[in-house]
Length: 207
Image (cartoon, rainbow, N blue to C red; front, side, top):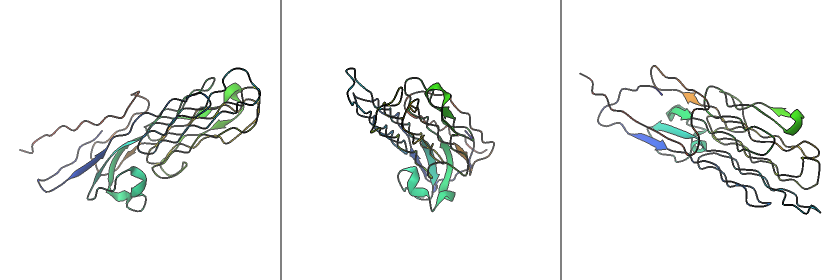
């Protein structure tokens, strides 16, 4: 949140992200709109029970000025036009807690059994500007290692994901980072909303 002085000729371009899709059987969930990563597919192999895919990462919500370039990643060479970003959370998966989105840094995650760990996005690092990483599709079996990994959340930088296979490699996605740019009295807080993105603008006349 934050404040920005505007005049009648100014325009704001708002892009509201969506939650990532849930897996369907072996298939990973769809990417959340505006930078979420796709969920990876699970490896069924010889298992008699369904080996699930990972969930998609949540998309970011952002506000831009000057030009409407669409989704956040399209501003990678013109990121000065972005004034605020609310990062999306990573996709969930059983046995591993997804990293929350937003805040200066996106939330971290660890794989099942705390075998692997990975940090969420920051103000300068992550998978890519505006884009969370896809979760890994598994191509071999393993104890808590055949399920697809979940996607990272979108954000100023999108959340990376663990690209591992084998035992205890099942892992949720990390969160994308938020950003406060061309506003005054700005602040960003992580992990305060579930579901689809949200943007609220309150007009305050200058007396």
